[in-house]
Image 1: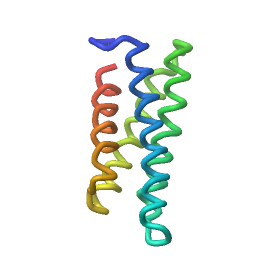
Image 2: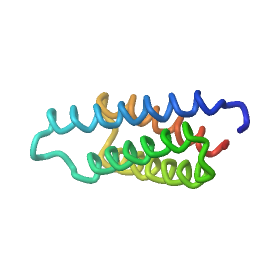
Image 3: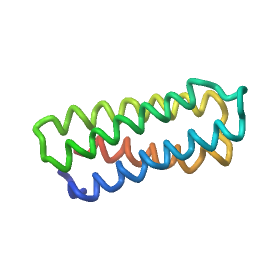
Length: 108
């Protein structure tokens, strides 16, 4: 791994997954029934993929590259969904974290 230790990667994935879950919950609270499903589902799918990737990274599984590719793909999808919706102060920190994850996953 180039420049990022496995534990650093796992910590960033875990932090971003929690942030995605928290952001999705807050977004639903703020927007109620008007919340776009693609934003919430995108964030939650990305979080689930990152949680799986954390487990795979921690186990040093041979499937690490595949798990990271899936996490990066779903993170990109979540970014796209939030940008289509329009970034607001609720989404900005989460999108920044998702972009960091995409970059980290791409260097492994």
